[in-house]
Each structure stands twice: as structure tokens, then as C-alpha cells.
Image: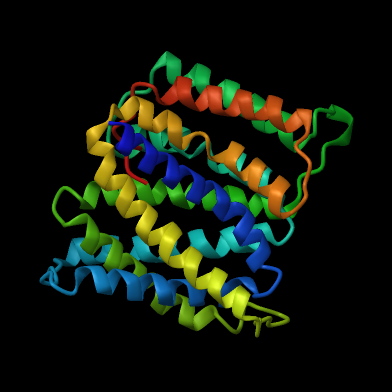
Length: 292
């Protein structure tokens, strides 16, 4: 049990650090190109994992869903993440993305006919108050929404859509195959936008930057996800979901260490509201968000 929690904590640290590493990478690579390059290495990693598996033949309906999953849940999700991090603060971005389970529950109620509870509504209000507090930096007189944060909201929405689509498809298709097919689609789509969307085009010649790009692609989107899904079965799902909500605090810590960004009282208070609201609203919906 301790070993399982240790591995799950490792995954949370990896996912939380991705906001800071992403912030570093967008200084050296332009967003669309960075998205394309990351998907190249993610797909190579997934092919390595699935080379012994027989490719699953999709029917027309599943193929259409996989296409939109790859386009929206993979390509737009990753591209908007990097576009947003060009100007958005990593900690604030992590806090906004922490509310994904709430939107996921709303989408599940709409498309999967799941019921919304009073707890869900109350938790959503608490989380929204926390986001408002962080974005306005605790002052109603200084409301200014960074354009990058709007793209992070797009990332959050596409992530929630990806969770719903994956849940529907996983009832019929191996999750690894879903991940592989959708990332291949995302990679193909990214080929058409890697150059036209970036003005100016930036590509680093630093070995460190390329190592960080490849390492985060494989570890964040490949290894950590596999470890999480392998260990989630050994622990209580509600406790594991609470662990995943610690990502904003990890982002704060890594921002302090790597970007020398001080942790403010506003961020701490906002984090407590947001994480508390998410835990409150998703307490009875832990199974939907038990896999990253």
C-alpha cells in the first residue's frame, strides 16, 4: 500500500512540474512546433508499448469519435496549453486545470445522463471563488485576465472532453489503443499547423532544451500515466483523487525552485478554495476521474 501511494505521489509531482517545464520550453520553442515535436516522441513511446498488441479495427462511429478525440483532446489540448504558458503564470494555470473534474462532472451529466448533486453545485461555487480570487490577485479593483489564461481555460475544457470521450470508448476498446490512435491523429493534425501558426518560428539548438522536451513528453504523457493506472487499483480511489489535486501546490514549489517565483498569500488562499471545492464536488464522482 505504501509503495502504491509513493508511486501515485510521484505521478502527481511529475504532472505538477509539467506546468513549470512547459513554461521553460515555450521560451525556446514556438507553441505549434513544440506541440508537434512532443507528439512525435509521445507516439514513438506509445508504439513501443503496443508493438506486441494487435491493432484494433475501428467501426465508422468509433473512428469518428477517435478523430475528434485526437483533434480536440490531444492536439488542441496540448497546443492551447503551450500557447497559454507563453504569458500565463504556471501556478495559476495549474489551479485552473485543477477544476477539470468539475467540468467533467457537468459534461457527464449532459452526455452520460449522470446526476448533479447539491454537493457538486456547492463545490463548484467554492472553486470558482478561488479562481476569481487568484486571477484578480485578491483585489476587485485590479481585474485583469491574461490572454494566456483564456487559452488555459481552453486546455481545461478540451481535457474534460477528452476524459468523457475516453470513458465512452474504453467500454469497447483497449485504453492503450485509444491513447495510441488519438495521439497519432493529434500528430497528423499538428503537421499541418507546426509552421503556419508560429510567427516567429522558434526552435532551440540546446541539448538541454531537447532533452527536457523529450523527457517531459515520454515521462509526463507516457510513463506517469502508466504508473498511475497501474497503481490506482491498489488504493482507495477517493484518496488517490485527493492526491491528484495537489498538483497546483507542486507547481508552486517547482515555480519557486526553478523560476524563482515567490509563493504569495493570494495563491495559497486561492489554492485552498479551488482544491477544497474540487474535493467537495467530486467526492462522489471519483471513479470518473480516477485515470489521468
